[in-house]
Image (cartoon, rainbow over the protein chains, first blue to last red):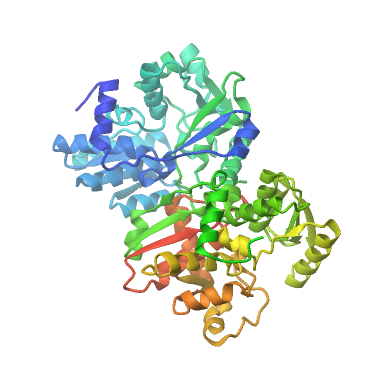
Length: 295
Length: 295
């Protein structure tokens, strides 16, 4: 299995997965451009297979696991990573088990089951997720696809806990250093304190409507990448700013994205530096229950 | 002003409006194909300018009104037609007044105001809408763009009350008679009784969550077209079928369409004839309040 994060491995991952991955569209809205005072492009990864960008890294990981004759794949996930891995495993013909915290959104759990994954519930803490997953992985002999710190996921362009940001930052930083990569976070995360002073967030879980980024810890693979490329481009947003951004995207683009996918746009809407005249916002996922409203 | 519905006028309308109108994408979902048992393509007119297909006919009408040196344009509308006409008037530089029933969704009224239309409220009945609109039109000397029975709208591909259906049925019936055009209606409308027996619906307003088709009456321009092309292809759906269709579209395509836009898909989902192996569903609009949920 690959152990290196590199532009070459990212390109190999792209080639390996391209026949099954959507080339998602880019959308825009004149009304939003007017409001922000800059051109805003939305990259629609919520229209990716399984409703999030995580299908990219999950498929890369599942293909490589299959090549290594793994008996199956396993991960812990509150939703998008689990759906993505379940889908990827089904595509390559491997069994899949997902360990899910009991408070995960129902639409995401249903999504996993529809791709024939075995779902095992655990307590909604990181330690319960990790220990349950480790036990099951050993018992079943499945390959573990870490949702926060995994080379094949990052090379495949994916995952929360810094992995997606690290993936994008690494690739853009290498190929297009003229483009700035901004990281938008719920303010409680305080990523600047980690990148500048080496101090991890005191909380294990963030209290935010952006459920896809509630894990506060940044993985050891991601931290040096973010430090190198994004130390001066961390943007902290308030919960009400995420809500406003979500409302504006729903209203103007008609895209039913999930709250986490509004995080990046909240940064553009409320904290865009004056020199930025054009912003690409990645709408990372769209897996939200049908009865979900913004409160 | 044009007084004829024809393929030539439809093509002229298309050329006249094309620089300002979106060529909206077509989306699909493997999960939906599996569920329906046929290939389903979604034409995304909810991503059209102003959030509905009505921008097409409204712009055609506003351009022609401007060419005729009209002082302004006026219409009555519960939402999408009003937003579309307000936008179109702003684009061509004409003043615009919209008469709105008091119970119209707030997001649609706000949309009209953002395009600088003057909004005048009336009672939520068709007679109040029509009389208020006629008075205002005379007082202001504005050109009246009828939302239900208007040649420039139909030629521009637009409007509820049968206009949109008539427009599509007319064009497809002339250019591609091998393609069947199905009309999906809330069951209370009983369009079959009109087309087969000449009997208009007894109600003035339908009791349906599909607020864009609550007007029960079919206009005199539309009736003969629908009779000619669609007498045998009317599909009636129940309210719960519209709800299910809306949920499935929100969940699977991530498109935050409005309830009316789920009507056509409800027909495909629950009443698709066996011989139909591929269906194009037009998602007609996406103007829905952010706090709207399916109940």
